[in-house]
Image 1 (tube, rainbow, N blue to C red):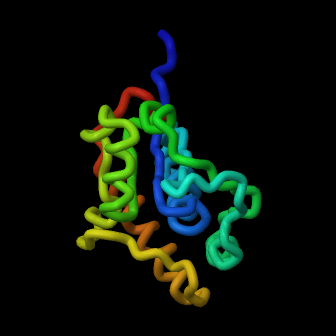
Image 2: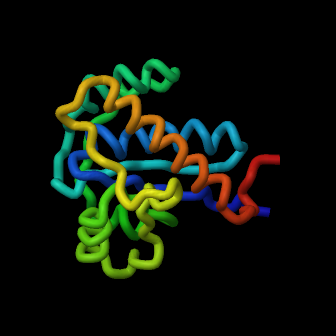
Length: 158
């Protein structure tokens, strides 16, 4: 019997250097911990390509054992939006950008913060490490709630 396809998650933020790469790496780690087969990517609505993660994002993720040093930003594309089973965005403007770029993704776009009782997850850019830590922890909580609420898939590890 062929192996079912993995769950495909796409995290989207403004520059793909702070929030979405932090969420991407936490989702990759958490789905693996839960035994779920998943492919996880992140992208920028600004179209940034090849930029490293913000130094504070790298530092605060390192504090929890996740390495963002190899991350490079990529622009949001219609192909990425069609690839994803779920498109998890940080702000209403990101959801709008996704839907404008690829209308077929509409039903798969979700405001990640809505899983934790907030509308948007604010951008820590320009803040100190403490603000990046708060954002990292908000993202962790939202990512874990999202993954924990997924219906069972036939592609979970046995």
